[in-house]
Image (cartoon, rainbow, N blue to C red; front, side):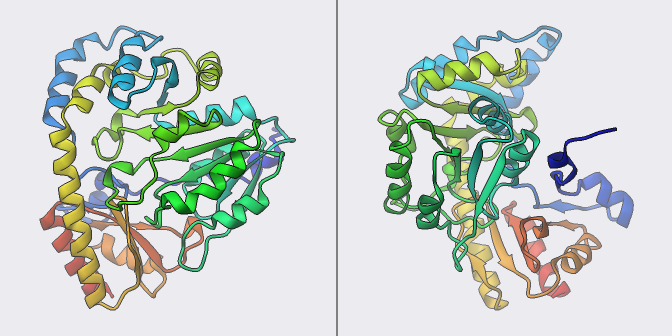
Length: 363
């Protein structure tokens, strides 16, 4: 059948290996998966209890207006309910924004190279040109180059902060030139993806929620998949100007946020002790990884996410396969153009220790 040329050239997203798959293929019973930036603590027990409480309601459609949950978000972030839209994960919102504001085969999106692959994939799926700006040598996003490349053809600029897979973040001072450039182009959106914002330790991390209240063409993406431990519920949301949200509400599918993800939102947000526990686990794990990688003489990026990105100095596929035989699942990132690097999620302390032991063995 005849298929669009843009889709023929599309490289589909490849998820990490599953625990069951590795157990079957390699005959190992104990498998540690630190590949998908999931919360090693699992889901909040209070959230699990709320899911069980509402499980009998899955035969019903959720309230498609999500008014109750919009009020919950608006109260938590001090915004208007009209500034909130929900998505089936933030990935869906990325796709919706491109479909709304980009004309196929005419407009373009501007992204950092070697950043979250969904930006590029959804751009190509929607027949939109993708302009990628190479990272700096230290793998930081090159804001100056993005500002220079920005023109009126670029209807959306996607900016992950912190970036995945590097883990590097942009400070308030670093991001300011791009904010100023986009604010002068009223028909261009700046979409700041803050999937890992709960893990930030840097004092100079910019407050984009405060900024979006003053900048009508700024969108902030958030997710409950990482710090909140709800990746399986696919619960994402965006904060934006009322006009932008009105368009998203018009275009999104009805019931795009399922009834279980809707019913747990208030419990998840209200229990910030769980988030503090998750942060403490991640920060302790990152410090441990950095110490051990230094001992092995391996280069890594200082991370503001719940993962660390390091150079094995070997073909990462070989290292990945050797670790699989020991029941360890990490994430090689050749699809991002990194041939020897691996991304490793922070796990529980005993998992982190086991992974470092195995990494020493295979290297």
